[in-house]
Length: 142
Image 1 (cartoon, one colour):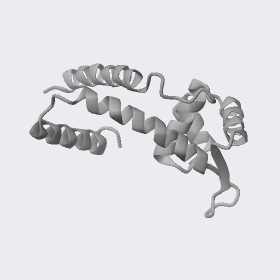
Image 2 (cartoon, rainbow, N blue to C red):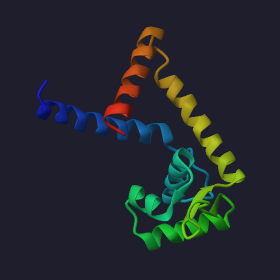
Image 3 (tube, one colour):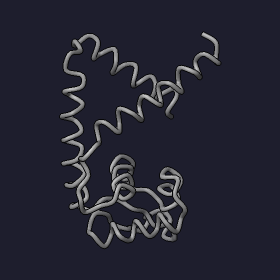
């Protein structure tokens, strides 16, 4: 397969990922947080701890806006700001216990929807999908 065709397939794939992600996550966030705050919590829960600039870059938000949303999340008790033990000048963000609980509940609802979505797929195909996802993670999304 040539690289142009591979790129075209990649674009179609990423669009489909965004669509299914929207379907699976629809209505799972708590009413206590905005959509932007939920996305920040979701990202922190997967890669914590993170710096302000890492969160800002991934969320495509300005540093001041990201800082404001993180301050609100900290005030709500959903995340914590900690000092990096390796570089005391650097501040890191991680989920608080309440944030972990909130995101755990959200991910549980998403997992239930995902299970229903893939319910008709056989075990051997699930193994193939798992291997394909691992390959994508190792080679493309590294």
